[in-house]
Length: 112
Length: 113
Image (cartoon, rainbow over all chains, first blue to last red; front, side, top):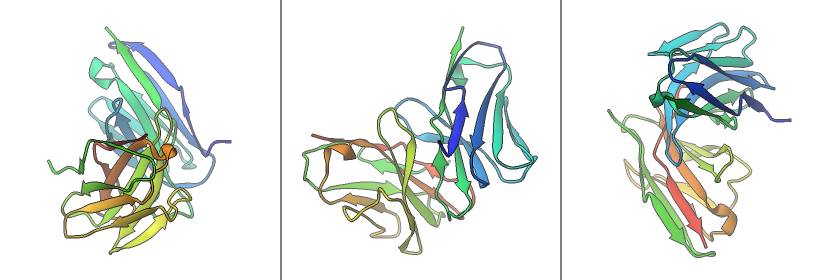
């Protein structure tokens, strides 16, 4: 099984709608990082979560790390076309120094 | 806002040739990384570098790969003898400390023919 599962794999939402993306690790993690990637481009850092129960927000994007530190959700409120892209969850797992392990990503399309 | 830069943006090479991918990390960062992403697949960790030595590497990072910080600003990834399966987008990243966010460059698309 995969170390890191993201769901859904893809999502199409209408502009203005809310959405949630999930990331679940099969191993204990010491840090979770959300990035956004546009096709063929680099990864843009969104948020880092390290403590169970931690919640962070940036503009209309909120991410939370669950108490057991193995799952995170990313929530976008009132989606806009600018939110379209691939959302990647990356984790720093127990037993690693700085290596980030990434999920397969969630491709988000926002329709008008 | 400071950012990680990478050159070239796209490199085409023949199988068996050596390539060097270049990166300029953010100036006050101390930790440097290379990742790669084969088309349609996950972003995969290759290597991390700190204090002029490799601190961690993956199984992908075999003897064909090497990294270097030749001066105070550049960080390079060398592939000695490229294979078809090395075709991928290569991302450089940097961070101030080991446990905090890594900032990624725009990537170099390597095509091996």
